[in-house]
Length: 552
Image (cartoon, rainbow, N blue to C red; front, side, top):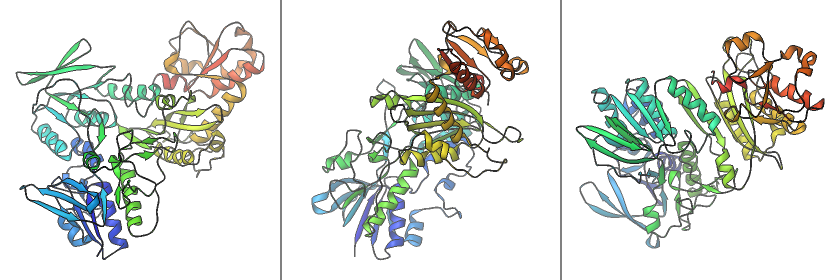
């Protein structure tokens, strides 16, 4: 009988086990998990804290309500699960692992195939801090249980979150929205979620959080944390903030010590190196999830993607290969999504910082549009930034946010990135159209058209965060009622777009013209006409004043 041992009982490990059982009813499958439970949806932790998920068991239940306990796996899946058991050593040369249970009992497990799904561990900060009940990680399900208990008991009136990535932002909303806790977020980079978003989209995220009472400090270099009289004092830059509780959400690292000690190859990004079949340098040892390096299909470089969606797919590929089906996992483009106070923020592909690390200077377009026709009563505003490579017009990444249809366009763009597409593929993108959920031209079509016009006519897209009062002669193309509702803070002349042909003489030819409108299209169109009629230095405000004012 074939024996398969899986180290790690969360997404990648459990998917491998359940898929393999479907394919082969005879294989002996054992999962080794250090926690007291398995198959826990870690991405649901902030929503348990926030109260959207009331019962902790819901996050590790099937769709029909059965808790995925060790007993469930044994009875329903014929998979043996050893909880509260750690693997202390992998011995590849002998096809064995050594394990130890919570009582200290040790034993050896033989395997024909081994799957490493050890996940990730928190990246601890390098500054000094005391060991205290008031200072906590937010990585394990146990962290979520502890926090929910403290919040229910009213032990936290204010909190500081160190780390403004996805989990830090979700945790901030969870503490603030349900429990009324005063929250401060400290992020060492100059904007939130810096690995995924550019400053323009992060600016919108920060505005949403600040409007809902969350205080944000970016560029915050924390030096130390002290504890005195049941309070924590966080020292950063030249500030010291007092708080009840501190959370570290400073990123993760692949959990690879077991693999490294077994001479399993570790890559330059810190994860286990695998081939497209997800095999390590030992052909009968596979690996999946947060602990591996995955090929980034946009950059062509290895990356660590800590995403449950990928871990589940990887587990399926491993099971197929063990069962003899010859499956591959070619890589990923890094689609990810975040919902903060009913606004969805998503990204896929590379952001500007990532692109520049590979020696490429990306071109970009910014846009503001509705997710369905302007006349439809349920339309919602979307803000977007798309990156592309000017030399070959290849698409590099998309960042999108709004209260409406966001994920469908990110998911569609994901497919285009995998196919090494250009902006022309955005123009050709076909979508299902009906006014209740889409416009005749959808946001991806619009973005393709914007890129084409920028490149065809040599029009510069100016970021709302880069406007210089002294640099531009601004032409506001909006109607007077639009200006009254949303004034433009820079000195400008008003030329109504509907009549701009009659007033072109107002626009000087010896100055840098910046065309401005509410969302961007009118400004781009007038900039094109000016270029065609002899004005040389013309640009437009990407995303319009609506993006500048973060008006959802």
